[in-house]
Length: 258
Image (cartoon, rainbow, N blue to C red; front, side):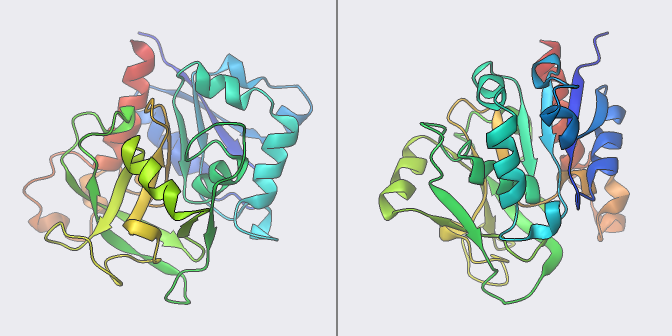
């Protein structure tokens, strides 16, 4: 059976690449942790891979702004990124990876490569690291969410996760294109302010996808929920037979297998 090749991108300060690679390996992928310098030097080519993942961490120490330097590196040296997305290959940006994808212009909507969104410091003024309730957009075509329940839980860990948009009109465009893939909600599934919304993101947005559904950026960490035992309430969980984070990654692998 084919093991899709997964490029797990590393940069100085990335610190979630090992567990992300391990998770993909456990669901049948063939992950390789690749440093950005190898792509820049042309020693590794993005189009030789089936899946691209930008994991979490603090790339380049989040100097200037979270994910900004990594985004600049991608825009300047990895010209294949736009083609990779257009070929409908899965792309996943997690936390810092989400920040980088947004700052490359790949998300929310890849038009001319213009950056139309950004991230700023959490409204709480502190680093938020805890489990949150999330509602998936059931109308989204996002391939990572196939077969998942509408309500899920995942951990977050970020200090600069507040999503802001260039203009109010853009929010309506995101709704129209079904690009709002996931929202922070209270335990009863309703939109709510802090602490349900850990960072203050506009419209409680926790994840964005392109309209085609193959490129996803999300602030929560799916690689930190790959076994039911990682859930803090695992002894009383009765509804989650599988860890939803692992299922997201499995969906990408199965998609590539066709």
